[in-house]
Image 1: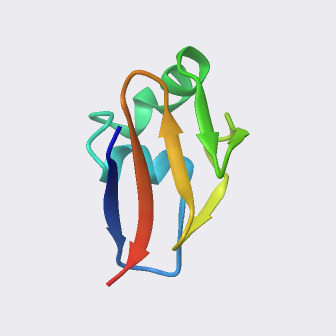
Image 2 (image 1 turned 30 degrees about the vertical axis):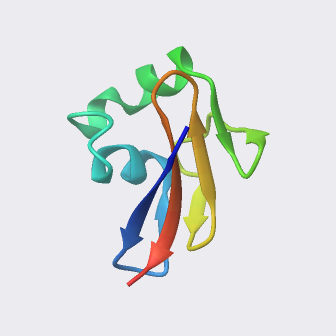
Length: 73
């Protein structure tokens, strides 16, 4: 599976913000449900906190959806 690069416009972004920014969910209101229904790993570790801080270099893998790497512009 190919890894899609997502360009960050700031130093950090929360997991909830990432899901909306990467167009994985349509609205922030879907975040809690999405995290409870999907297997998400950040840098290989299971993660379900929408407030988890993500930085450039982090990799997010969402089972059956895709893999993403955060990069700075």
